[in-house]
Length: 118
Length: 114
Image 1 (cartoon, helix red, strand yellow):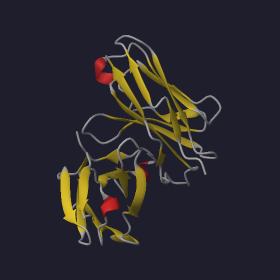
Image 2 (cartoon, rainbow over the protein chains, first blue to last red):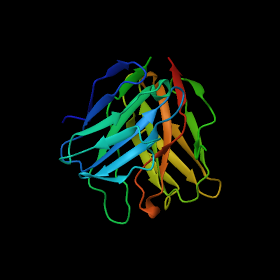
Image 3 (cartoon, chains in turn purple, red):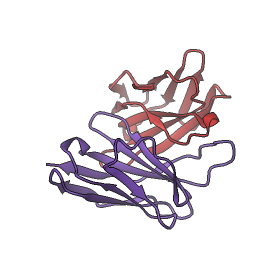
Image 4 (cartoon, rainbow over the protein chains, first blue to last red):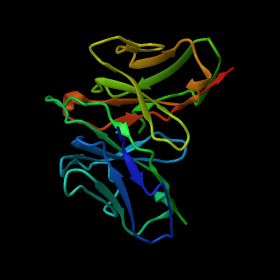
């Protein structure tokens, strides 16, 4: 079956521009996560959706970052007024509906979008 | 503040021998641990996990050991194969708090020499 897909695979933009990154989760997965991976680091959590709502956005670095998931499937990560420090690989992951008690199902990752801000 | 640490950035092992990748964590609320494998230009691929109620989980050539008192876990791969060459990330979550996000280490690059 199809895995998590992300588009574009690469995005080059200029400082100050606006960008949108798209994630298509695995069909039927209700949980969706965004992570950011900088060079030489592990992925860092940004935001988690359960269905259409952002259940945890504590990882978003500042108010230039915003994400939506209007129909509970595809999600878009939006970055305003991009800065050179935003350059990283942005990873999306999805998982089935978590079981009760805060149980975490395995997260399946997409290939990522490499964002370069010049 | 790195809550999950992988102190060895790289490891080289001969084909057929055992590979041991180590991971330490600082947050005592972590109760679920995972290992992911990552090839260049691909996203991390889930490998194996372990709950804090266990101290060992095995899946084929891969075994994860958890030492809660030391806040340490390790991944054993035996026998190692050239196709295992990749970057391995340790990750942890605190399910008991209701959180679902993962905290990752910085990764260990494993090279299996034919």
